[in-house]
Length: 69
Image 1 (tube, rainbow, N blue to C red):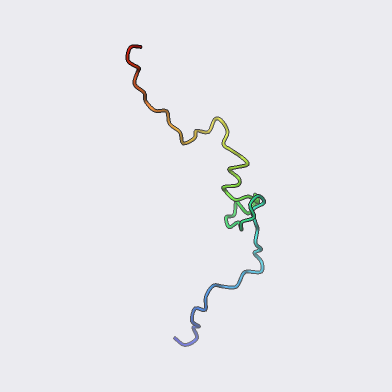
Image 2 (image 1 turned 90 degrees about the vertical axis):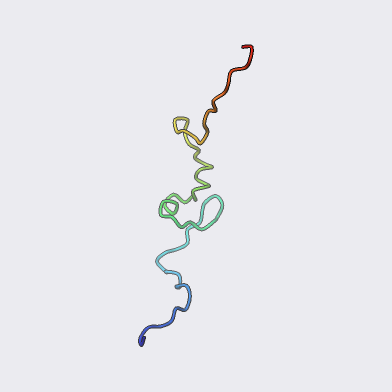
């Protein structure tokens, strides 16, 4: 079509949006919450582990009683 230019690849970086890097590992941050906190999700989990009232992905296995007990 006249007036349309072919796709020339990725867009140039937006000058308004600067690269924010993780304060712990230095990787670029992309998520809005990560950019606000300055930490990526993995590094944030390392520094702020879940509290004791938050269940973890561990379940108690049902066990049979020992014979003779």
